[in-house]
Image (spheres, rainbow, N blue to C red):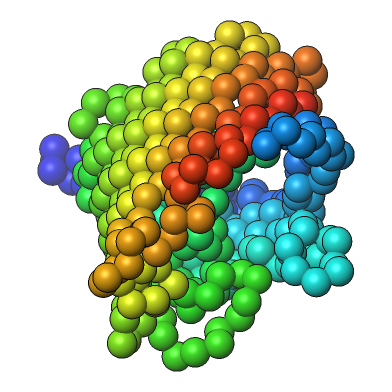
Length: 327
């Protein structure tokens, strides 16, 4: 009798759970929201006795995110910026256009996806509107590309991810048959402390290979990040190896953030050359400033940016007033 009662109770609970799940699925309503993000600044640059004063719009992102079901979503994002070639002042690119599946420990994306190579670094730096993260600035890899991505949380402290992409980035669609494969491992030994290692491979004759190591600490008001990046055959050029270090940190109050950053980019000497192959672009970067958040969606940041070229060219000192606007 007891067994029959227990079975009946279990069957009722199972039926109730199934009904609740069905109702939750039926109650879900697809929804979406548009987004706009603008990066702009005014700056004065002093170098070699000359002064350059400029108003600038660096980027404008226009997009829409849509949740089709509890597990399936999509994102469309247009990136409007200066292409830095010819007489074109502003050009629009399709930066993101993908479908995502997320369920429990698994996340998968396909389409024009955002890449993971330096996403954690960029998030902790928190100043994309001021200056790109190290690997983005020095073209170690694009921030988005056509491809597929899958991530799985093996344990609450360990996650792995794999990406297969064209390798050309979102501004240039596939121009050769070389695909870029990337593998990443993220470990969170304690809350607020992340360690990540990633490796990517692309090309044939002189394959570009990148090793990136990152450690970040984020707890209450303090953020600290450090990264080491090493790339062999940059943009598949023979022996065009690059090494970079980047350190950054910030202290957050209610409406103010104090931050600083230091970068160092270096390259190797090839064959019988006397100077490193990237000598004209190697150097050290210094950034410091105060970020104000007077109202939701607006960040105003006076900051200093200094560049010390490795080749002995004049040091560049820049005073910026940078803004990020989010709607």
